[in-house]
Length: 126
Image (tube, rainbow, N blue to C red; front, side, top):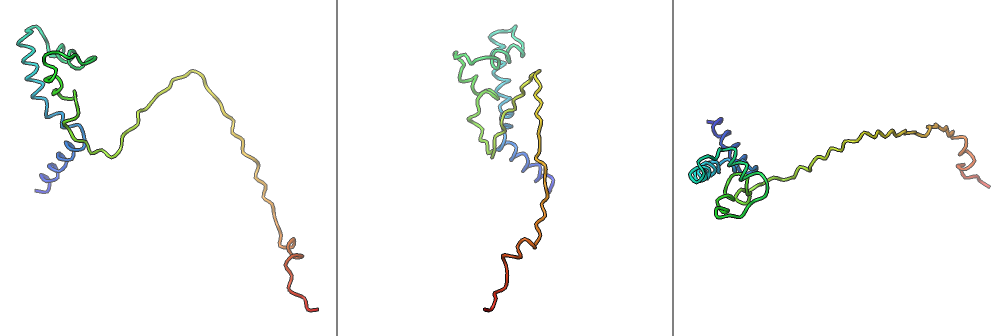
């Protein structure tokens, strides 16, 4: 029972906090592919994906249906992510820069209490 509850809670969290809810839109993708296949019998599934996911969106008669496809728009899914991962930029350069770091020499100075003997004296009676 605990295992089933744990799996259920993980699924609820995954669908609520990530874009995994887009997986639930795959039946819409299949139906939309069937519509295109009926109009153009020679169209393959790869051609369908290229038309709908490669490049800019073309506003045509089935634009609303295109926007309901998975990973096409994200306003129907709620994301509760607390942070955004910054993009990683890799700069490749053949120029190598060498930096020489120099540290100042540490001189340990000894200060004896004899130097302060003349300053701190007990009060003298006159």
